[in-house]
Image 1 (cartoon, rainbow, N blue to C red):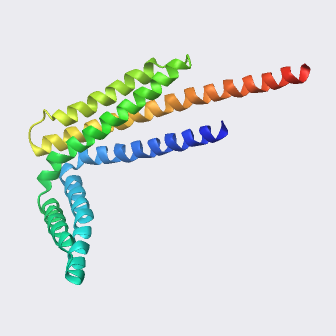
Image 2 (cartoon, one colour):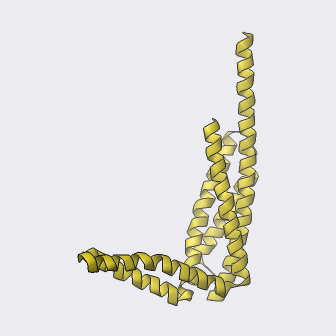
Image 3 (cartoon, rainbow, N blue to C red):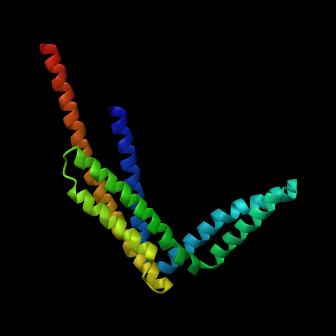
Length: 196
């Protein structure tokens, strides 16, 4: 039981750290959308470009045909991302939207688990649904213009991060209460066994 609790704490702590990173990024995106998108684009481009260059070097060393094809494709994608920041501004909401929806569904599952334990789950359910709605809005992307998208993306990232932090704290607190109740039940059972 202690191992499960430690495992859950690790998941919650990772979720809090991720939410804080998204919150900070969201604030910067809202304040300096052009600068942040440019930085994200260059970083993503660099991450994709490096394996492409390695594949091309591998081809020139070993003349292995798949290395040439994958190398050329990844180098082109990496260079496009470095040069064309507007492309990232249009793709990023979709990627974040998928992440938000998946995370929202996971949160909803946690909330429904709380319901099975007969613990207050309504707030957690509402927050999870709001996270899913944020994700869906990102995926369908009803906002026009790259600058508008990035500013809206900043607002949504801030909203998501705050909702996710709230949800994590609620679930963590409720899980802690369940753990304490189970601990007391085990202690009481041990005392009863000793009395018998």
